[in-house]
Image 1 (cartoon, rainbow, N blue to C red):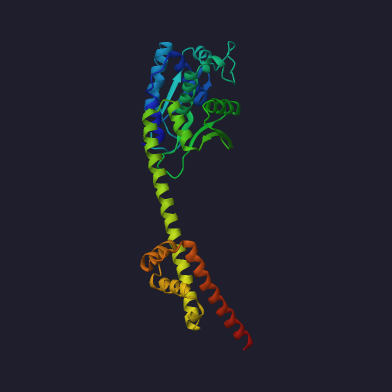
Image 2 (tube, rainbow, N blue to C red):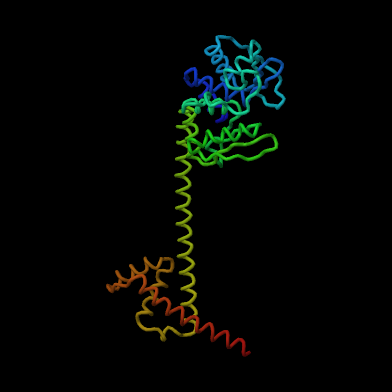
Length: 317
């Protein structure tokens, strides 16, 4: 079962007042209802949504509605259910804010449908049941989307989402308008808004695990990068010492620098901080990391002078 299905099945059992049910049905039918020939036709692959629709119509209009299984042209293995409202559908559409008193379609949702905070949540819940999808947080990216056919409805839904500061955005797609949320924290907030409590707990558990794993990986990468830097620095210093020794240049260094030279050879893989601590302990003479670095620069300068002399000699041959 996909995460989207799990979310939809959970919110399909959400307890609602009648005004919330009206808002939820309004959002659902606007975005997954075909109105023609005195009928309202809705389709879904989810049995729980079918039950939700039947229960809602029973509570609001005291009528039973029937559903049937039809061919699924999307080649999905899941069965496709069709729900048809035939008995006085215009009265239903007026009550849900889709038709005016003259039975003309209302493009913009009336204020009374989403007049209160809980009704806004219900409208968004119905919309998600109709056209929503959300990635499992275990996947590589966080993503929630609603694919809306009509531009005014897309803008309206975006405004509702952003009442809750969800930073929802719209993209124009070939088959409509995609309203989407990318931020993990905002997606979690959206799930709370539509009443998907269990889905939120799962989402947060996975998100915390992923964040901790990413943090650990970053620390490991930093540690490895630091280790690589230490090894490269020590390798360069040993190469410089080798050049000095090959040119009998050790005698040109003062005693403190000679001491550092011998300790670098003795401890070739230590960092400067560790090498300074070792020298301080073994000699009984404290040396700071900056003091050690100063002496190592003397070694580098002498090695560089030998390399320049060698290069000059080669150019004169």
